[in-house]
Amino acid sequence: MLKTKIIAADLRNLTDARYFAAWLVDYMSFNLSEESANLSKIKEIMDWVEGPIFSAQYTGLEDLQSIEAQLEALSINHLILGPFANENIINSEWQVTKTILLDDDIVELASDRTYIAQSTVTFSEFSQDKLNTLKKLCNSHSIYLDCGFSSADIHSILDIGITGLVLRGSEEEKVGVKSYEDLDEILEALED
View 1 (cartoon, rainbow, N blue to C red):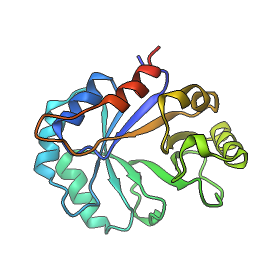
View 2 (view 1 turned 120 degrees about the vertical axis):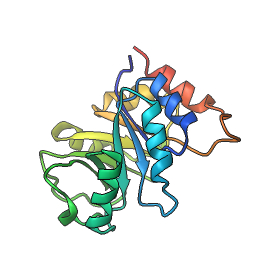
View 3 (view 1 turned 180 degrees about the horizontal axis):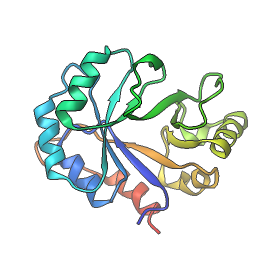
View 4 (view 1 turned 45 degrees about the vertical axis):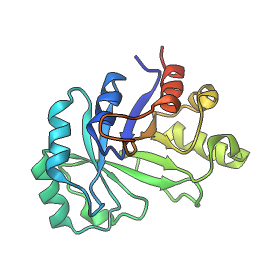
């Protein structure tokens, strides 16, 4: 069991899906805003893995009909929307996690929504102001943190009160072969 929830984002292959499933992550997310998104391959991956909630990532600039068709084809009802998403595309039947940028000024957030606080700066380089902003957000919202960090940062990150972390999949070195050394260190630091 892990000390916090995990969204495994940008999954591209079965190797990543199996790896994250073995760690009992809470969400597995596929980037469907990419033109190269292969729905039949994603469906195959989903059929191989049990446990997590499957999610679709969108920039939020896509048209509603395309999103609805993809979600129906994959039987997904959880979306992760990018920071510039058009809020008008949100259907009340969907669970939505919205990305916000910690590097920008944050406007008022809906109290009933889960957010991913994303930063281009690594956690160890966060200013005190950015840490204070993140703590304030965590006190009033369900917040997942999406930034660069190492296993050495885990205790400090958890002390902020986040709901969870975003970890990312990546390309395989060759089919079925991939190194998970960095992710292993992070996930081992998160074990209870």
